[in-house]
Image (tube, rainbow, N blue to C red; front, side, top):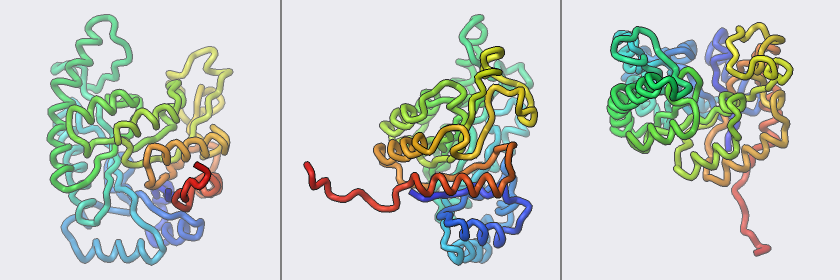
Length: 322
């Protein structure tokens, strides 16, 4: 497995400087934002799409630093009830898929998006319970009338280009946990899979290694984000984990995104790495820094330190003892 980094946290640095810094840390792979919420500081999509010269220069620059590109990232909402916003997001994703194909990159990371609760609604609606009955009806509308038709077309586009679309299971999106990811994959094609980010699963009460096994059995893990979450029980005992407190009011939150090792210890991350290997995943563990208690560089450095001790650098040898 490779230790990778989503370079968004270094977006105020030039790409050559960011790559030089990451290479010096012993990082193996980079994930580059090319639109949507991650932005495009290091990969302006429109400047590189269909430009063989620019693409060649980019690949040469990455190779000079002994790195590879594990994924492109363009997280947005292609299911938004505002048709203009939905189409912009879908266009970003389609173009990112084309660019990944042209660069020889296997994966594009994104969100599933979230529709409204009915054709008359104007804002996305995250349904978290089947009652009162109109909520179950809204969820069925979201899946059958919006998500599956639109994602079928996007999945076909990905298949045409030989690129995986890696959906990050994220609350406030239609796909926020493993069974929803499996449902979307089954309704479309095998190019749809997970950008497995455990940070959004911990606070939902999901066992991360069990989730790895569940999706791994379905060959549905295409890419992995390395990102931790700490749970703060003294707040959760009062208000639970559906916490709308701003991320920057850290002491009042029930959970926080943390650097690797600050939510769950090194032994846990070694178990995650081992379980990923058991289900056949050998790609990047792409560190996404969103820890508001430390700087981007310090967070990355501490995460790299933990993951370097957790990942396996060789393939298994012969089991001579059996």
